[in-house]
Image (cartoon, rainbow, N blue to C red; front, side, top):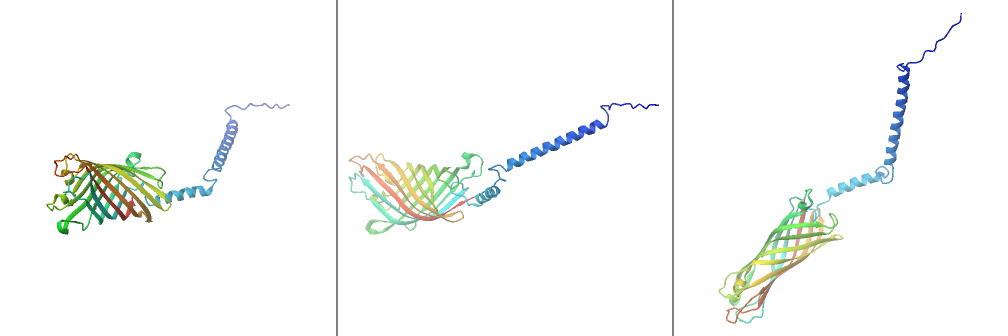
Length: 311
């Protein structure tokens, strides 16, 4: 009796077919994952990557830490404050003086302590314009100042200066690079001689309330920083001197230079000089009591001090 073997075709729904497809799918997935991992490894090891240069990441982190630990510079500080001792002087002279009832005036070597401060309230803002817009305030007053009265007698004299205004800054090359400043505000300069009853002496009293616009800059040079600046002043009032003349008009300019040397975190020693001059024009007539074509009022000082830039 002959046996017959019947070949039974495997149905597509047979359990063997899914297992073969499953094995092929798993192999393809493993191969894809291996290719992805290899691509990522090659990318990380490429030149310029952090892993290609193990010191790069640590150097960047170290630089970031150093930047955060560095004391604020003048161009990025939230606030700055300083105290100075000025040695000041003043001279007053007339041009085209035709009357003999006016005197020139001169005083030198006057001690004049001063305080100053700047505040940038939005220094940590992300808005570029706001973070570099601030306010400034300064005040100075002379100590122990007397003028010479009739017969050489001492006459009590006061000399003070106050400035308040807005101030903006612009960094040219990062935190430690040059910085430009521009500002505007009101400056009050008062030089008052106690009345002596002698107009020739009393005329030297002035009280300038002036609108001031100025620019200045700070340039790091090695371990120090050099500063220089100037401004124009438009007097809104002039005081006793102008009241002695017909149709007086006046204008003013000022200049300053300084050098700053850091000696501790945030602190710097400072030395400098400043100069201001007010020039007058008078429309005098021959019948006037006081006759002069104009006047020149010069105020100047040298100073030593210390400043702090803080966060």
